[in-house]
Image 1: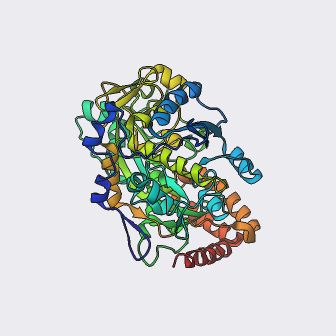
Image 2: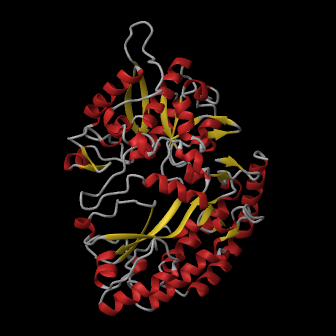
Image 3: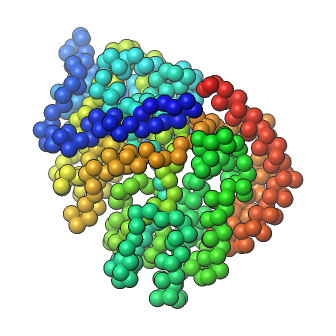
Length: 507
């Protein structure tokens, strides 16, 4: 990926092909070979492997049940290949914040935009500057991540290694293919606009007049807001449609994002037509026991996580209607940073360990999915989780390394995933709309009273607005009037001032 004049990422297909996700590399998976992984970094005094303390993320404070036996298997591989083992410690967002500020020691740590904030911690000097070391000590790691190093860079210096995964927001209709394709004989495309869903809703309603094809909860359509980057609350945004233009850094009220409001208007039309459940604004969650033929969700091209027919009740076809849209925050979904207090030898060991994650498929799969034959099995160049794996070693793959260097997960032998899925995902990123805000985060300290009032106004109307329950334009008119009186313009001006000052640092 090159770097254009405005700082936006431009993907190079030739570089992507060098990442190690080629068919030739996949063929090495069962050989357990790691070429160019570097010399071992054993303890000079004892000859024992160097042990690293690795902090990673858990949403609930719990590590997987079988962590210790999986780590034992992974440590055997890494000890043999590079003379390094790890002790993995899982932490919640709150634990990260506490332990970073109190100075508890670690060698490498999970970091991202939404947990253990990468830009904040790198700016505070918590993370090791690996700008030169990663190139000299682990050139294969550097080439594997290239061209996405900007994600782990602050003020021209590299402080984190991106654990590459889905980097852009893509939102999909999750459609009942048994009904629409098998029963109705329709051909569902790979992509459609939001409005093009309407004939499918109409067909279902005509066949099932007592049901609601688009059964939704009070939060509205999952992922609909991904057409813009939120700056302050839900009410000040920058549309991705403006990326790369003179308006790419202009903050506007959400009511002026025509792409978003246009979809809300459609929602109201569909509510009036009986396609949406009349109690949507009061429903907390839509369980899978309600077999609605249309749901939505944010994922990536080729995702198989919603293909469990036993749970869903039918075969699912994903059709994208938003994205890919990118910002620094979406790109910073997973990084590993090295403690600034670590010795140079420990820093080298961390980098060699991360290089092994990127270059040894068997090792990466062990960290991601567990022990072959117990937690998962290989099938047609993909992995299928076993019941034991699902129950005792289930977690998001990105918390233990890069998703792109792990085998792709199939839902089952009758629903296999594309082994080259990530090649196609990243190929699609060539056409991504990429925010111009460079990871800006608004500080509401100077307008706390106004933002509190605006948040309250938004909350009082949100459920009815985003579910289509109330007339879109009439509701927006009421909300805008109340928000303007509560200080919308003042907050907008303050946010714009902060963004303009922030962007000066990148110019």
